[in-house]
Image 1 (cartoon, rainbow, N blue to C red):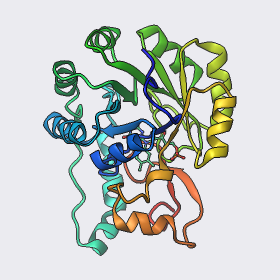
Image 2: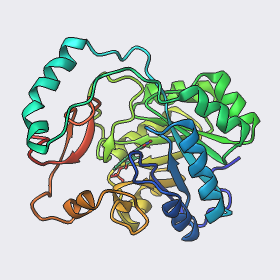
Image 3: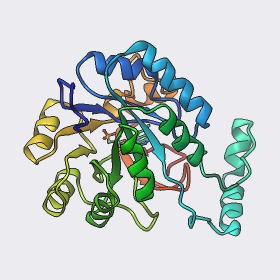
Length: 279
Ligand SMILES: Cc1cc2nc3c(=O)[nH]c(=O)nc-3n(C[C@H](O)[C@H](O)[C@H](O)COP(=O)(O)O)c2cc1C
């Protein structure tokens, strides 16, 4: 089952958690011939199901849903979290907010899998890890194609071994979080280089992501052996994007032209615009 069956344009709208991906964006991308993706990250299973339902009402074409894989070994020493909390306290005070309390959560992972098995979506994508082979088999049995985001050749091999139908190969240029299985170091291999490495190692369709913003980039990804290009940042300022107006404005602001990888926002490495907080 190809994830691009019925897709006219080899462009995937990246799932973007935190409010950016909306049913309207998915429908607009589908309407333009690409493959739209919803983001379930940071949402409850119920909120995810609601967005799926809203999307179904707006488009009859295939779309994807992206789920975060919890990392059970990622507990950060409490003292380090407390130290960071202290460090950003003046910033919080300046903004009149309270830093949250740190707690480990699985992002409602099992409930989301149950919901996706009960009401299957054409493509189910995973980020920050690889699901159990058993869960991949169940999703495939329910009729979904399973995509896993990878950032190294080793992750690609593990995902294919576990039964993934498609890989999203995320290179170093990618905006947002680095989707590595384990938070064990910054990913620095550029998208097209990583695509070539992964292509030589595994034999499943690949979607290339990271730094692609237009037709030339899509063509380069296809020439490198990808079946499609996944674009995130390029959709952030669209009308249908749910990104905060402040973020939309900052992306077009000449004062913010640089990006960098930081742990400052969430603790996980992510690429963002360089601003005072990031510095
Ligand atoms: C604001 C934002 C949120 C993102 N959220 C997710 C997410 O929830 N799940 C995911 O798999 N990738 C997420 N990504 C990463 C994208 O899937 C993709 O790898 C990246 O956007 C590609 O690089 P580009 O932004 O240069 O196009 C996000 C990216 C951005 C910019």
